[in-house]
Length: 431
Image (cartoon, rainbow, N blue to C red; front, side, top):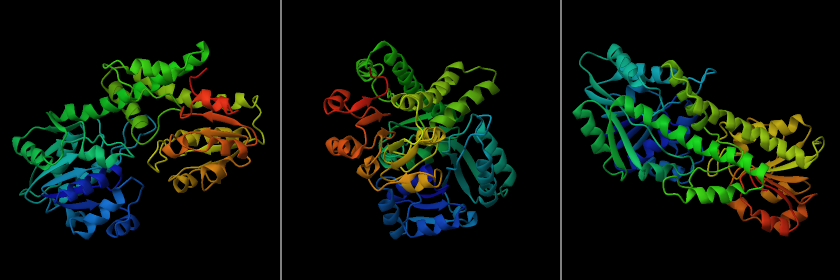
């Protein structure tokens, strides 16, 4: 088949690369000339394990093509995936302006029969509006069906998540479109779930919001565990052994971030309000996520008797999660700015996000590795749970710090072992 993907962010580029690797001809449409030119050379605009190698492989094979011109990419397409950003407005609603622009340009260039599907996370009813725009803009001889195929990839494991998903959700009405999409996804081994368009739109929001609920629940339990003298990690281990619940995402820490959970929780709250339902549960989830960052800042302040003026804090991890350079809604941003407001100096290192972070936070010292961060710092603070941080030589770290103090925002160290080694150790939800 010939596939056209609108957008070259995480969802768009990973989708394009995977379908190209299956042998399809794939066009990827972007709007940033520099990124398009780099992609034509096989250079990815962001870090994702294994992605750049696959981009280059399929570009060199002639299966993966990049352009800014809809006239080039839309007419030959059998299937078009809209994979543009839907960031939150101040109200929490999804900003769909990029979806509308994409739909207009697609409509103006449709030829023959095409299945047009969104992969972007969009509120219920969005695909119906896309259909109206396509109908208005298209040539009378062109035909289309709409569909909703939400993605469920996680940054850091995006390729494996796309190749081996738990499920492939296809929201569709017409049998012809259903057959095209099922045939396209045959090489992917996930369970196909065929639903109505509205149901597919809702599944993505429901999934991300429920995962956010688990994280905020773990953080709320961490707040309580600290008060009663319990260890939240052991509590979550015990809870997670229940097969009905599982341990995944029951992860206390400094809160969730990234491009999905924060915006999707807010968007679902806004969708519910539009239809007259007060989604109080998700409002609380959002509030707990904010509280997690505030309480962690307070934990750092308390370790220095509320006197951070002139103190040097070494930060390990800047990206919102490991195996990505994504700084969108990263908890590190708010925590570092909070430290600076209190007069602290910050040294930081992230294995891949230093550059992206420097575009957002310019007035800190960026280091080349974890040991450089620790050298001369008054405390070591963990904000992202990169594997390489878990295996540091803590004796060496201890010798580099001014004070043997670790404040672990991701609970990656064993508190007993750390204290036995002579560290003052503070985790999240650990007595």
